[in-house]
Length: 347
Image (tube, rainbow, N blue to C red; front, side, top):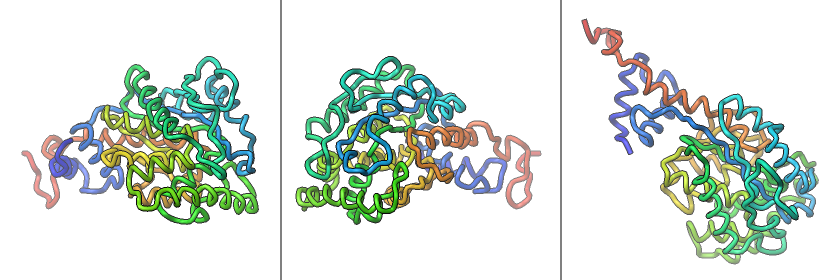
């Protein structure tokens, strides 16, 4: 990694008052540290959408039935989803991965078939995954990134899975050690009564998990949480993020579920944290708590709560623009512009 003080001095010597580009300068500094000064353009761009179903869906925690997961995967594969429209506008490729859709056969062309199992078990009554299934999901995530050619310069983590805000809420509550009621939200748009029921469902899984993880910390808690209340697609995204760090690829987190994947991933590999960027603030109430735990400042606040990587795709040009500050702006001496204090730096 590059020296922070040297890059900060470069930023402050550019033809602008120091700090006048606000958060963009913080992003430029981070990119310079990670990728070098000046950082390269962030192309090619890729949105990885991991898809999986959740056994807890039959508990009435979502406004939509589980078959919507496979239907939306096919919609993405044919270019008809929101993520296709938004990714196309920023020249990003969309890769859809079936890591755990509840279907009796592969979903068809345009979807990577990497299914570990057909959906998770019901987290409210039993562990959602086995330890072996968790590790297989992590492995699949890393392998998928290795298969994407050409290798992307930046990644967006997206997901598709009816019921996955329930799993994400449980994971966040476990790692942040806070009550489920402070995190659980409407997800796909359920009623206040249904939200109360969803809290009870999450707490049922957490009660079992807390008994198991008493005295555990860090990676031990993270792995146990993935087993007890995790999601196949969430574990797959964690595998993608861990492999991205090994390949020195910046990762843009999307909304609540994607950010929870980032939270769990940093428990497994603390060195991943500098490589993660928060794209937006979701309308899901738990998202702010997870962003705060990761000390992340989101780039956008548009009231999004769709997932799929949509907010991440919108953030791609902003992150690339931050790098352009270091790549393309002139210094005071290069431009012949007077610096602070009024002294012209060259004749």
